[in-house]
Image 1: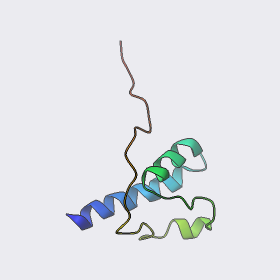
Image 2: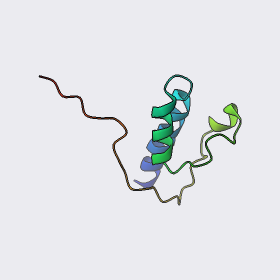
Image 3: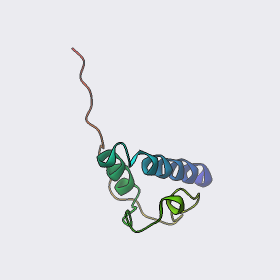
Image 4: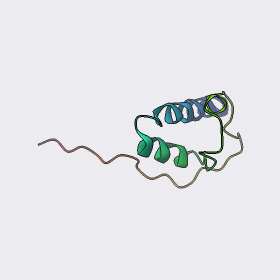
Length: 72
């Protein structure tokens, strides 16, 4: 289970990184939720490498990154 959760979080980190050019605010919120505080100090290709999320990293308290859409 630990490996599955790590893979999901690492995939989310890469997705958040790929969103950076088109949705920088959303990307920032995703990466902060994953505890990635070194956002601008890496080369683009380096940020897309698999396994950069530390395994023993404690995640910050979760907060919603998008507001809920209410339909009438």
